[in-house]
Image (cartoon, rainbow, N blue to C red; front, top):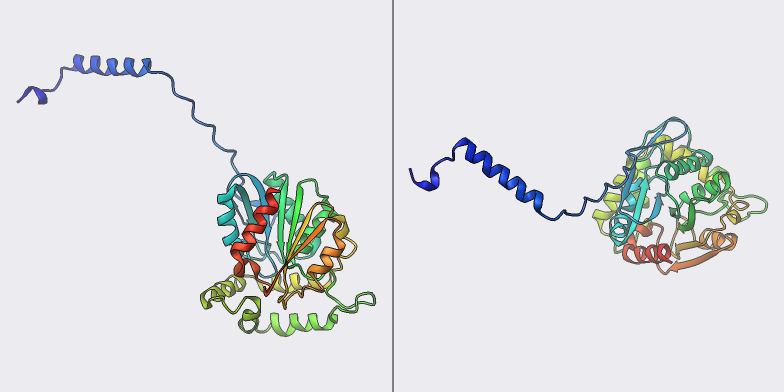
Length: 309
């Protein structure tokens, strides 16, 4: 056996190990490890016990995304993934009955949905928030201000919002008859919703949108429960938010496409801009309703600029 492979006597090994310990102890102290970031809640629980699934990516100023009718939080994938790399904390959640959230038999009215938004902001302890709401989510945001005030919110971005008053009334002659909405619920949503999605997918996007992207969007919407589809449609089409929108006094940005057939610019985005006291309207030429899918780079840039200013 060579000297190189001869094992040390036990006492010599202890001496060597003790010497190494002494050397390590004599080295300059290194900086203490950074404290771990505060643990974020794994789930949100609404006032009635409904569990709301959410995504929470990034650090920095919080931007909370609310999806439109029938869509889960995954619809914001191309915004949250990119903007969380740009110094924003991107939070999105599934409305009750959508995606991975619980699907109770009630609570799809704007009051309860606004309370769900309040639960998200409070349980994540978010402040100086930028709210981004697509389509019917504009109503949830407006009702949140009416019911909870705006102490946690510093800015609001309404993306392709629905009409503040979709139904026809004496003082709202451009609205649609209430009977039309009810027929849609009973004869479409409760009979053949998948076929309706197939037939109406193309106007939601642009001619350049790939078939694969359209399939993905349809898949997201097919995951929503029938109860949520019907009741959220009822809530959004019977609401009259005209007297509440002026209460959103924080800076407001409205982004709307001039080819939006789901929520036409004239009766939707422009009306929001006229009613909100600190509003700016940006019109995307040739753009449809599904802007988060069709105008990803431009929309992300506008959200980032709005959040940073």
